[in-house]
Image (cartoon, rainbow, N blue to C red; front, side):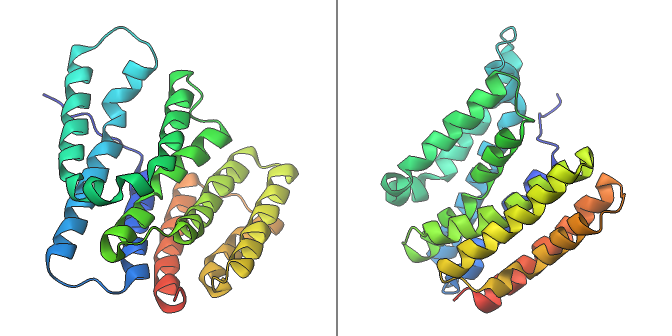
Length: 236
């Protein structure tokens, strides 16, 4: 029996980096029940993310696939069980994020998940991991951390689109987006040093060069590691 898995490696890296960002931003995690709950919560979120592999065909309105439905129920139920420590404390604080889930499911349902806004909504869900893990570590909901993480990794969506379209318009959008993120960081009292990896996005847009998407993915992976390092050093 083949287990349905989400095979979008970029999405998994964004999820992992977002979880790590929540831990690093907290910087006060002790090796006790708190860490155990963080591990459970991370595993629960991972199962919910992976449920997309079996859920997508059902949402798109294809014929009822009992196997896909069974896997969806299994992933979803297991994920919620692991999330019980978080749901018990944090559910009232995170209700607003359900709107993002509905929005993304809508794009999947109408088979438009590769629209720019749909991909951004997908990243907005993946990066919720950062404030959730931060909440489990500190008991505080940090929308500032969420936006800081989402806006950084959102730049990757625009970069991939720029590399595919190869037009002056998307190059200008890339520069405009990075500049807007810089302004947000500045006025939100977040160290702009954390955004140093986005210099590569801007230089790539100005001095455009052809490269394979695999190379772009590897570059984004390195930038993600740099982002986490800078977040640890300069976020607080």
